[in-house]
Image 1 (tube, rainbow, N blue to C red):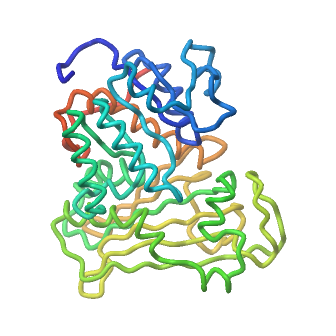
Image 2: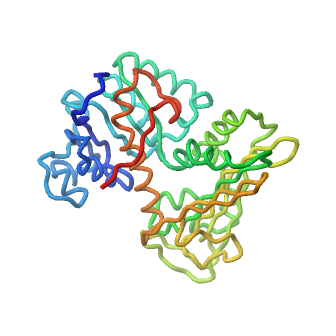
Length: 355
């Protein structure tokens, strides 16, 4: 199971949502991965061919809702793409069942696993026990958190001396996001209602792990981690491409984030500028091209780097890159010793695959 081989890795794809579909497509198209199973939660997808579910020709693998039967069948490693929004306990149950079955696992949720030392100790304990029980390995990855925070940021800061601060900003137009997720973020709400109902726990749950990971890497200790959030409203009512009604005078753009402070000064910051329409909040920083990410390093010298998506929907591009990061490390995780692989740097060099 742990011996390096040229034989394709047998992969089970778990979920076919916004991130799962591009992962499924990549697994089917790669020569070094062999799709042997597909888990879906929707009755409408049960029994359908995996190729057809991701826009490809049939491949002879039928989707199933029977997780137990799937885990009792063939497979070296599972690519897990199911959402953890409102279902963290269910996700952890899934991860443990997969690991206990003896299959290795690459997951893009939950994001707290990006920094194991500050993740929920009870969750980490369960996952470690599952790895030991199944002699299996686990790795969390993605893009933000993920590639931007565990790889690219270190290459960029390696060019500067005496770094005062580092800011990483996601800038996307996200009108195609699922309406339930948009509502959870506060879009479509009146600012007064949002101010009363929003909890910073949401920010901490999904992104605080990035600050802890980077603080450890840069060998600094924060005096305080502080959240911030501002909103912008639309003057005219509209409906997003995903079907969310946004009344006039309600939130159509959000700027939020977390910052790590030392002696009252911002040292590390993770922030988001998210719009439902690119014309809203023109006074905020504008994204590169249609959307992407911006790194701002204050140091000697100061450096600003933009990563721009070139597709028609930057949110889709963000999901695709998240999925590709996971698929690209499947073989490396399968070849790794059993246990939790806490950092991307613990894996061998993993480039993308040339066409």
